[in-house]
Image (cartoon, rainbow, N blue to C red):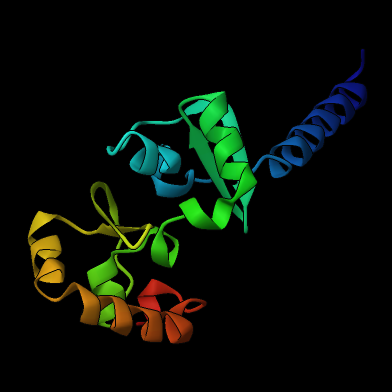
Length: 149
């Protein structure tokens, strides 16, 4: 093989590898991979598995069992956390902070996550007002990047 052929082969390999790489997308599963049905059914957070996956409104959810996945797909809106999993206290204040899947509460059959236990304690002091403020603010900030708030 002459030098031109080798260079052509290498160029072809480089372009085919880069084209393949651009087709791969990486994202963090919703709720950091926790099974959102488990909060309601098991009354505790349980890590999901890559074996049981469902997509809803652009987010990928993992489940601990096929039964939980099927429960979710029958009524996903019931199980997704409020504010797409952002911290409930933060949203009530007009901000977006990551919610911790281990710091949670279900109120009126809706899952709320908070940043940490200290923040959740503040949120719990006046949950009704926090939920009302969160619902009002979410309409305004839902499609705004956290860095812009």
